[in-house]
Image (spheres, rainbow over the protein chains, first blue to last red):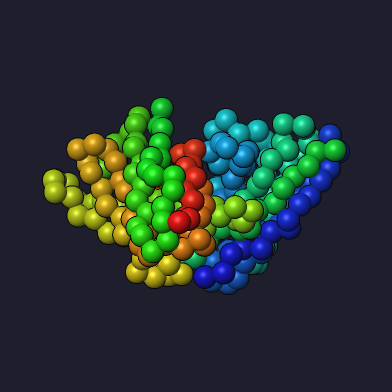
Amino acid sequence: QSALTQPASVSGSPGQSITISCTGTSSDVGNYNLVSWYQHLPGKAPKLIIYEDNKRPSGVSNRFSGSKSANTASLTISGLQAEDESDYYCCSHAGSHTWVFGGGTSLAVL
Amino acid sequence: QLHLQESGPGLVKPSETLSLTCTVSGGSITSYNYYWAWIRQPPGKGLEWIGTIYFFGSTYPFSKITYNNPSLKSRVSMSVDTSKNQFSLNLSSVTAADTAVYYCARLISGSGQFFWGQGTLVTVSS
């Protein structure tokens, strides 16, 4: 069970769109529609922003969207705002009731 | 409103057992379709799922089943105290590599939704 691969950092300007990738394998990301994404500010509880690959929980801005192609899931944030500056983590079911997370991506809003 | 709070020693000696408790408020730990998980984040690294515990059955005492990260092998054990609405983690034979922020979380397994506590830092050092 290897960690999912995410870019260490991404950046964008206010109003722009950015995409964070999350690459796994055919045993996890590519085999289940169970990729979720979390926004994590240091010292705070991680917050769910996308589940089941592309669903948004109630209360999460529609600027956040999820998608998936084969073994790679993606999180897109449109209309970047300063408050979006945070760490983002993906997670996938990996079979047999196990879960695997990504290494995290630090988003800078320049 | 659901709230999870981790508690336990912030410092553990090498080779000893790390013990943490998660207190759940705003919801019952025996609620149907919810699993309860432990996740950790070593300093400067990503998140790592440690394990999940699930209760089932319609009457007390509930049956439980646990799922652990294979990389942690048999060092992990989890338990529950339904009278206190708490679940716990024990991680044995710790080393410095087990230094991390430890989170407890509620998992809706069928949809992969984790709802997290704020986390607690545990340092392994003599």
